Image (tube, rainbow, N blue to C red):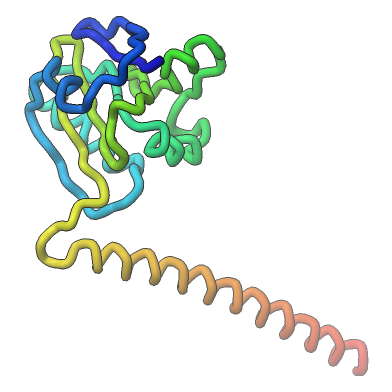
Length: 174
């Protein structure tokens, strides 16, 4: 069984999987954001929200693939409230953020996030896009620099600990 939704957000269990193209027909997509980032982050989601909020719409639902949602789980309770009711989870409702409901569905492709308002207007976020100008390369370089920074900090802590041990030994000798 697969989950689909009507314009009012009513959950319907269908025995046949809804195609992404048919799923999108229920919504009036106002904008599409593309990014080379491979994972959803809180800043990207905030930017997506602003796309509808700038049109005087409040976001009510966030549709994404369960694989894409796995990153949201790592945000912990700092940013979103996770759903604990097993029945709601089985219906695809995984949590809440800023007044909107996270809904995971295999009808949504990987690396895609769709937000919608009660009026059916929506905005799309496409992750992992090949953007002209080498944005993907810049993001990879940024990620590598962050990793290197963490490694340098670790080495500095080890060096500091070693210096402290040497100073302690020298003090004991004197």
